[in-house]
Image (cartoon, rainbow, N blue to C red; front, side):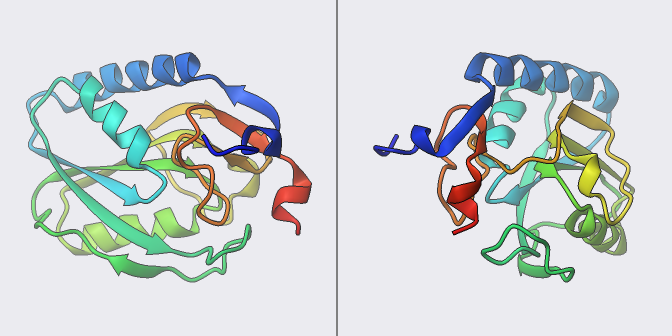
Length: 183
């Protein structure tokens, strides 16, 4: 961890052990629900990488994996309201169940767009798994089937989540000090 990074947090919300427990429980639920189905796990880059890697180890079923890179935030803390696909999926989802893995569901704008996009590509069913669910900032309603935990409306980072591409490699999830993202 780079010098000074932990000083940028006003509080640690979830330790590595607490995150591991949440991921294990989500993996068990997904394993039960997707048993006997052909499905694809799609991670939303970049934030979901750590969570998705750990989650995949907890899903005890064969599955395909793929990734999408989308942007609706730019370098700020507020959604711009429009979604840009930077990298689309590489393989077909036609007739398959899809599980989107997201680090945090916030406004719902990006996720709503991606769900519609995947359904337009022929996905049989699209489900969503998120580690953190921040309902207070919802602009578009989305059905999130698998939630690690609901969180308050605070700016969080760590465990894949960033501010301006920093803090992704932090092993915990914490609340950033306001002076960090309001410079």
